[in-house]
Image 1 (cartoon, rainbow, N blue to C red):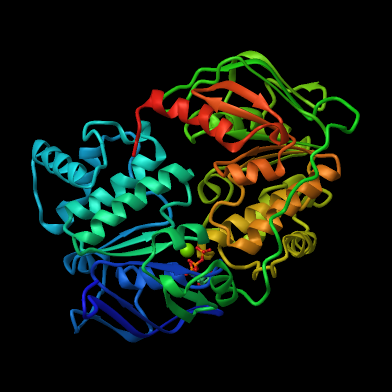
Image 2: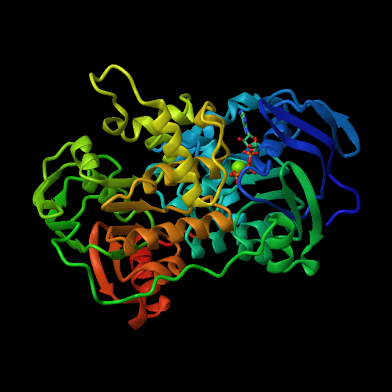
Length: 512
Ligand SMILES: Nc1ncnc2c1ncn2[C@@H]1O[C@H](COP(=O)(O)OP(=O)(O)OP(=O)(O)O)[C@@H](O)[C@H]1O
Ligand SMILES: [Mg+2]
């Protein structure tokens, strides 16, 4: 780590209507360090980094680089100061190849390179940092861990030396995150400064040199790695102690009745970048959590889509509560009591510019339409927002706030509150706790278990094996659109499941 900071932030203040997102924040960043930024959902982490990247303007405060005060009025200005940021949401264009994605990013810096020159540079960097990325590969076909590395690659090609990564591991399986940390190690040796935002404490302890914890817009403390422990970090982050991880009491006895969900010999076409599902046979009984394990991109999204009716099947049948639903529309499926938490809640489950209240109503219009169908019962909507958030153990937000003004984790909380609040019969949950802080993760897991106790069927798709083992009654491994294994968690080890999943990965070509 260098002797004097590369960057200092002093007295940063940023308010949005009704909230002080950053309140007198100070932070130093040194070349050669990984600086983790931690804090509960809505603590102000992304806001602070967006100020540093020129995306927002601070109301007050000072930014210095190499001891000199600077004004960062736009992302363009930030990039000229060699600051690069990977946002919480992906910004790559899936249909383009790696070279094209990088080429789109560079001209803003006045860099014009031929595609073959870019490809050469990508190879150079990839070799130095052991990325193993093919410059001509289509981004949408890369594993998600490799896509995250393309985001980092973009910043390196743009000559950034301060790299801000906002929850880069949110979508990564454990082994993919480890691959990214190995890249961090090398970048550190070359003097880069890395800001790494995450909610996973294990990751922080594995790769950070220093850790700053934010709480309600303020800095609660900065620790060096040697002084940090999970307990210490948790007590800096939250008011309350964290209860133990939720565990479902796994039983083999089930509620009576037809399967909440049954898929028989189901196949999908798999057009474009979609994976085709191959002869899926699957049952989710009432009162059962069926966990789906697998490296993401092996048909998880397609499985969710086909149940909801967003994707149609070529052959095979789908039953909901014993009724054939193969050709039902999405609204018919929803009306039958199916809750859906998609992989990308901001894009797939909300209309971001509309307020929370409208987004709540849109999730379940028939419930709120008044007699005659000309007006909505806003009081009932408001009541449902409050009740649903109470179940999640977080205060309800102001319902007039547009969803796009919510922090990443708060969008996820909203979708969970809406989908799990109304006693669904079947819950299709894709990565339901992605981007959530520890207490919200626990609350969401408790809600899934409670729904199961109440007789709902749950299809839980997750990359977190710990979560799958803790919650599932049965586990299924998905690989290239096929079910390649099924077991009971209490009779299986994570390494066995990991083996099935990694077997799939080796066949795809390793990404680390
Ligand atoms: N554009 C905006 N308009 C209004 N309020 C905003 C806007 N951006 C952020 N906020 C608010 O500022 C606060 C801090 O949000 P921020 O996104 O910085 O949190 P975060 O620490 O990154 O949380 P998460 O872990 O959930 O991503 C939140 O209360 C959020 O609702
Ligand atoms: Mg954030």
